[in-house]
Length: 250
Length: 250
DNA sequence: CTATATTTGATTGTTTTTGACAAAATGTAA
DNA sequence: TTACATTTTGTCAAAAACAATCAAATATAG
Image 1 (cartoon, rainbow over the protein chains, first blue to last red):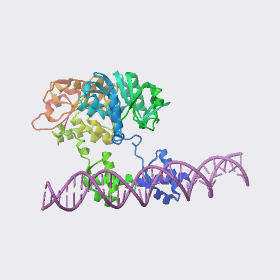
Image 2: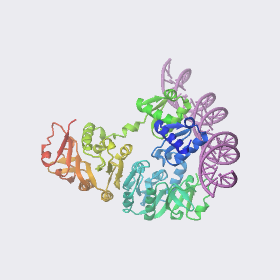
Image 3: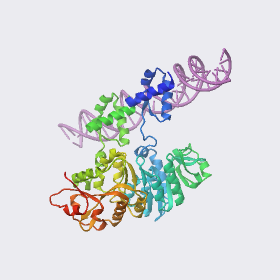
Image 4: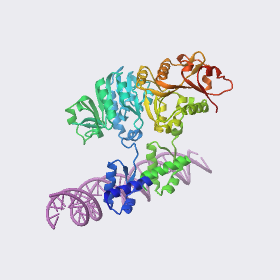
């Protein structure tokens, strides 16, 4: 059977049943498991379906980035350590920018007694900021519901109302050559603008982000101080040659 | 059976019956207790359900969050009626402004299928707007933590990025001579700006607001269509002489 | 036709999922 | 409270599914 025909059969089956197992498809197409696996990989690459252990399902629209609760529990201790270190740079009465994201979120408790003013694009931060009675300004813009962040031209133009003593950004990738990266170009643009508006720049990145590259470039390594945590299998010296790096040990 | 399919079955069952026991799910899915437990843990982590001893239930907040706890119980039926009426003015594909507040909040479910774009300064609206997958823009500005609204110069300047087909405002007072009023001058200023940026203006005011005066003036009666509910002890004819009034009967 | 490139199915070792079981925790009834 | 039954958690080994590799089969080009 021709490959396109097989692919069509697979897509039709999934459309009809929502899910499908490899075995179903072996019977349906009379091809081997290997072939079906290859087909599924290909169809996933084309974003037509979503592979799951044992088969495939209809694609969810929002699987590009993990939504908030999913991320939140991963590496939480690392994040807390990094956040605590980051917060130690904040001085009383400063105006700081807190990026949306789980690591920056963990900074909030440490900001409570500092009488700082916080500007953020992260909707998830608001409740905690309110609880600690921290003066907060929110960027405007389009509401990205899955990550609960504000993006778009509205956010960028809101930014021009503010200047920051320090900014604290989360990123998805840190790479010696490709710099700081994140999946969403819109968010990258905001982070880039923030970097320009702050006197001092900090990037918070746990060890899983090091030496990985995401789609959209934010800035070069040297444009911010990087705060990360130590891990035996990751060598931070290449980064240290390019920018100031703070390594947190748990 | 594939994991996502099992998860879906579990969620469907809980949606239908509100609660479920592990045994129910073992029978339903033909999986072992261990697997079901793992599924429930995972679904709880994703905040889809709530685990209880012996099984799982609908997530508490899911229903609660649709209407907020304190104010929302007061005159909630009146507000819902007014909100439904207000929403009936919204046409598909329009851009509308939804003011912060409990009455405007109740409009959200009725907007779901209309493919509208919503601009708002109400942080409490965001979760519901997200759940109904409504395109949302948020004003920027200072976060007033107690009412969870955005105010200040940042909010005003954000507004200039937008124009609205219709705006829906909440008010605290409606008076024949003193017009629409609200306690906070900052919020009044925002409402006033919004009125100017919209083609059509609506004010939502249940009967308790009629003939009362609050501190800060927003606009004259005639500058918006008023949507209210009927009550024997309030005479709406003075208002009807000055502006268009829609009276909702429960 | 031969040579080359592509697709396919089988095999390998590795990873993930699963079900079973024991120990700990929790709920219940006396 | 204690005693008892049920449920939960954590661990482990078996089973299923996986990615990677390779050689045979098939298709394509010259």
